[in-house]
Length: 357
Image 1 (cartoon, helix red, strand yellow):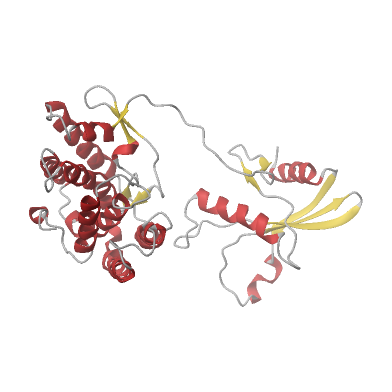
Image 2: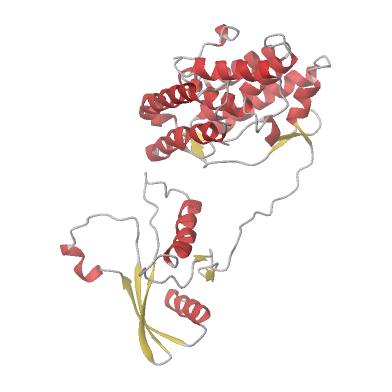
C-alpha cells in the first residue's frame, strides 16, 4: 500500500469511519520562507481530509532525530509521543490528541493510544549470575576458572569497545546522564534516606559539584565514544561452563564512554573484597588489578584512567545504598562512600593507591 493509502487506512481505523485523503504536506510549508523561528524539534505533516462528507484537517506530529537534544534513539521519540498524547488532553484549551501510534518497518501505521504499560519479551538465557561466583569466593578459595572468567570479561569489553562512532552529541549525552539521569548520580543521591548520617547534605552537594566539574572535564573527549553495555555488573552476567556467558539488561543507550562498563564491573571486585575483608581481601584485590591489566593490554587505552573516576563514584554510591543493598555491614557502606568522595577529584585514577582510596 502507498504511503497515502496507509495514512487513509490508519485514519479510518482511528476515526471509525470512511475517510477521503485530499492532501498531505509539511505543516507551515507555504510560509516557511518568512518564518521567524528557524528550528523546532518537530517535523509535522498536515492532513486534509473529507470525513463523513465534511472537510476535516489533522496534524501528524513527528519528531526529527536531531543530534544533541535527547531525541537520538527511537525510544526517546516514542516517549515524547506517548507523553504528549496524555498531556495534551489533560490541559485546558489544548488541541486534542486523537491517537498515538507507531510505524512498522513495513510502513503500516499502528495505534498505541490505549496502551497502559509497555513490556519486553526476551529469550531466557541459561546460567548462574556472576555475583554468585563472587559471593562464593568470600568463603572458598579461588580456582583457575575464576581468574579465567575475570580475564574473559576484560577481553569481551575490549572487543565491544573497539567499535567507535563519530557522534559527539551521544558522548555529551552519556556524560550528562551520568550526572543528572534519574538512575544515575543525582537520582541515586535523591533516593538515599535523608537525613542519613553516613551521607549528610553537604557531602551530597560536594559530590554533585564534583560531578558537574567532571562533566565539563570529559566533554571534549567525544572521540572516545564507543559501543557500550551501560550496566555491566555481576547481576547482569550469566555464566555457564568455563568462560561461556550471556549478558542481560543493556541500559541507557547504545553508545557512551568505555569507562562506564569498566567501572561497573571492576568496582564489584572491590565490593566483594570489602565484604570479605579486612580491607579489599584476596582474591578480589588481585581480580581488580588483573581485570584492568587485561583490558588495558587489549585496548591500549591508557586514557581510560582519566575517565574512570566519576563512574567509580557513581557505582560506589549505588553499592553503598541502604535501599539497594540493605544487609551489608555499615563499615563496608562507609568505605564505599569514602571511595566515592575520594575519586570525585582524582585525576587520573591510580590503581596503585587503591587501599588509600
